[in-house]
Image (cartoon, rainbow, N blue to C red; front, side, top):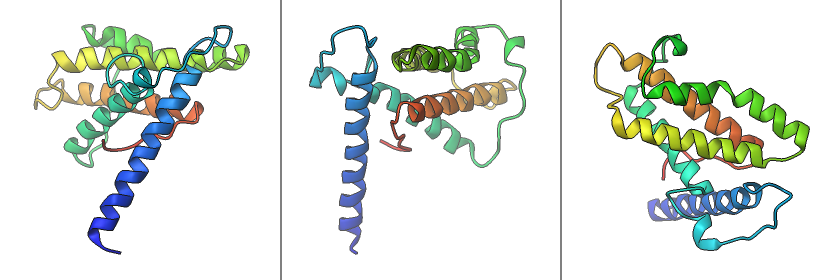
Length: 167
């Protein structure tokens, strides 16, 4: 197989995963008691409330962690450090509860809405923080980033949406 063919196959595979993520997320996002209105343009927006937005946030976490190298994040007491990330950390803690509620209500929209909230909080935090700054807070920031990535990946997996590592 030629290198060009491999790149074409990789791009096709990525496009397919992103399209499926956009459609699945758009269908699962609204409360099941509401009418479903599928808007193609909104489903592929990279900002706001779309599956693509969630994938971008996940890819961002993975990009940061790749730059870190093979080191694993240290065990961190997330609740010991207040700050802008406080809202993000509080949201992370609620993931098991959101999954339980989605199971009890038989409604995946709880998970989809939660993921949008996590991604918004992460992107706000990311815009104001330099994560790989060499400071003594770096391990803490990396642990938060890693946790956000795990929660997004697990949440998307529950929704039947496959993650991608690069966009």
